[in-house]
Amino acid sequence: MAKSTLSLPPVLLLLLLLLFLNSEESLKVANAQADTWCIAKPSSSDAELTANINFSCDQVLDCGLIQEGGQCFLPNTLVHHASVVMNLYYKTMGKNYWNCDFRNSGLLSLTDPSHDSCTYV
Image 1 (cartoon, one colour):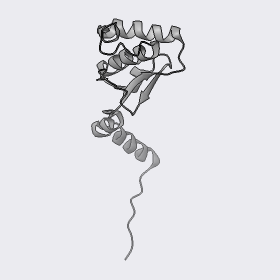
Image 2: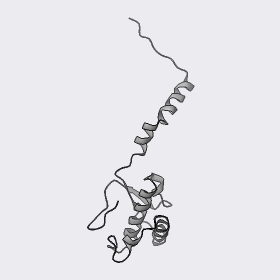
Image 3: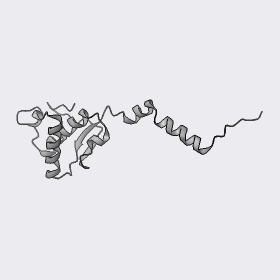
Image 4: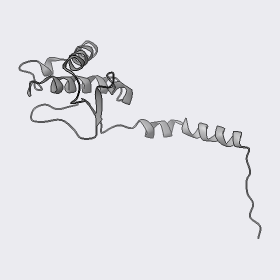
C-alpha cells in the first residue's frame, strides 16, 4: 500500500505556523503567568530602587502598604519596599513580563515572596 504525503510549499507552511502561533489559545498559554510575582533584583542600586518605588506609587496609587504602620513596611529596606510596589504595578498592568522590567532592575519570581502579614497579591 502506497503512503500518500502532503507536500506544501515552504511559504504556505510558514503561514500556517504563524497562524497557529497567533491563535488566541496559544497566546493564552504563552502569557499564562498566574503564579508569578515581580520583585526587585537584589543587585539594584538604591537610586534604581527609589526610582522604581516612585514610579510604581505614581501608577498604582497604593503605597500605604510600605509606609510605617503598613502591612508590608517590615523589613524596612529599599529592596523590600520596591518589590512590594513593583509587584502591585506588575499585577495592575496585567502581569505581562515587560511590566516587570523596570529598566532591567525587576525580576520575575516563581516563588511567592509573601511573608508574615505582607501578602503579595
